[in-house]
Length: 241
Length: 303
Image (tube, rainbow over all chains, first blue to last red; front, side, top):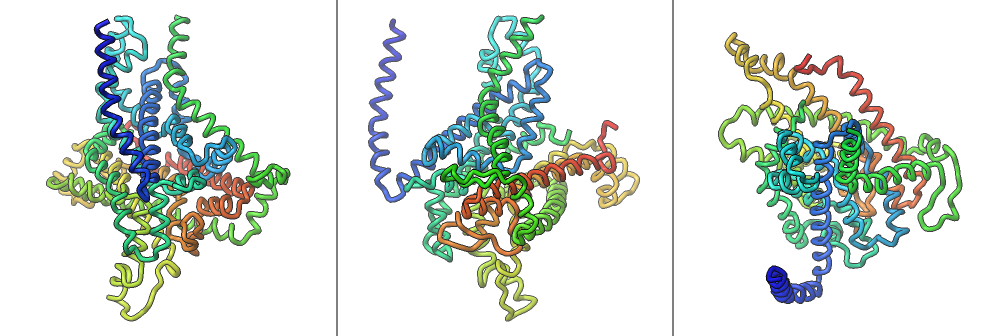
């Protein structure tokens, strides 16, 4: 009972602390590009978090599971890399259009849930390198697959998660055409589409150059922070094997 | 044993279900749908124009001068970018591998262009400072031919696009080759050096042959990457206020960009889908050809 009371108290405190933040967001939205910034942030966070989580799960499944078809299915994952984006882009647009999802955050939520082949590859290579004894010990203790994953594998995955998350963020943050196409009907757009249209219309960079340089800083900064792990990830993934 | 197998299978599906659902809903089904509408005259806003036209979209592609020019652009640009890119990546990796100090710094600097969003890289850097009037290209050119005016984007669009693509995509390949180099055994090279071989001999006869698996990987990835060259020709192109409606410059009208234009500017989805599938077929064929030639020139250390 006491535990419950403690958690309720904490939740109440968190809510109280968050109220100013939410109100602040309402003010930000009234700034000229506030809405666009909010949109950019939401789709970036959604896609990054969801795709990293989904790819981690899938990578774990492809790496540690003991079924005879898992490697064949993994080849299918890699084969999807070969399909040009423009081939599936159009039907996806038709699909989202018919479902009235154009101009919402849903496309990025769904793409995030799907994961990306490169992230799945990263996680699979990483999780495949763990020793078998780890899982066998956990199985002896009677924990389920999910438990094993969550308790044993995830805590040790921090560098790979960082690389995968940063990679996904860089991908979605700069993806102008997707944002323009799937957000076109929304007058507020995303920060990237608004800034790009300004820049393209203005001829020489001039006064519109600075905002978009500022926009480019987050991915570059994130990259600099994790670049050491990227190299290690490439080396240990045995790409040349 | 049976129950355990079933449990394993269930666990597998559990872990891969988000990916699998996404793959079916956003990957496989759109792929099939795209194939189907490539045989129709589908327009987005209404199914009333949904007539089955068979291979007309495919046949028209050969008679349409713009599409044929696009095939040529795609072939030429890909044939340049992929091999030259690999050469650049290997050169940078070898250079980087031979240094001991400041390697991290140079690695970061060389990878930086790959991290810059395409919009910033093209609109701000290349269009704004490199190929504009009085920009870097002009300055270098005027050292050799002063007084001659060159509009780089109009006259040499292919060169600009090729240079941009190599500049912005070599970073990752460089890392891959660097990893490959570091995984090579030292003994062969040390023995050769002890026998008095020069470093270029070592490079040619030992390092490169041992690297052929990585070269093969990068060639395949490069081919796939070239087929995704969608945003770059559009951003380099000229047109309306929003780059969404840009037309690529002459000579850089590669297939992915053409599919985009046909689909979303001319709203001719059937034709766009047909072109997209032709692109897919080309990529598949190219990859298969590369795979078929591996025995000839790829040397695996396990042989």
